[in-house]
Length: 253
Image (cartoon, rainbow, N blue to C red; front, side):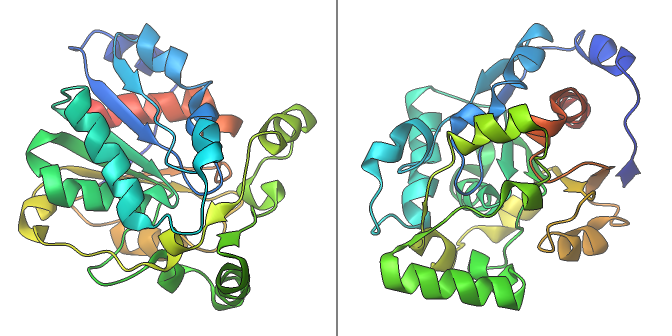
């Protein structure tokens, strides 16, 4: 089902609903820091927000090592859910984290209210992230990853980050990403339960990165999905935090 967002009045009206629990999971090279402009907007609307950094990234970059894989990152979020006693979660995965939230949902579907794929990978069982990346870019990542165990960040301009102040901020925080998280196929054991969960896909189409149009094309008119198209770049949480907050509140309503 396709939706379009309205103006700031949406923020006001949606703030009247009951408290939701948002878990925002960042993508490759990023960390919990990237949600800094979105968190106050969701909390101002009365909601609880968690922004964990995955192992080896963000404020956990000191733990980086080539052995980190997709299972490590799935376990990161599973432990957050367990230790914080979270339930009825709006679980948001940006970019690479579509892999992560899919794995989390497969294991604790009963604790999830809605899955939100924010310009994110939507993997099939047995597939790895690198299987969905445009071939030339995937070949470059594979070569670098197999040689060093890590993958350098993509240019911020490809992610839609162009304002000098935003480039300066993001450049200080992005770090190399463990390659095994991109090359390890996801293993799903409870797909039937996950399929029944309410799901949202947010497509950031201006400029597109080349990786997520394949999912948008499939889901745009799928009545079992809530679909939003945002005319902004991939790193929407940096570029348009207000627009993203409106979409997340609509998705959770």
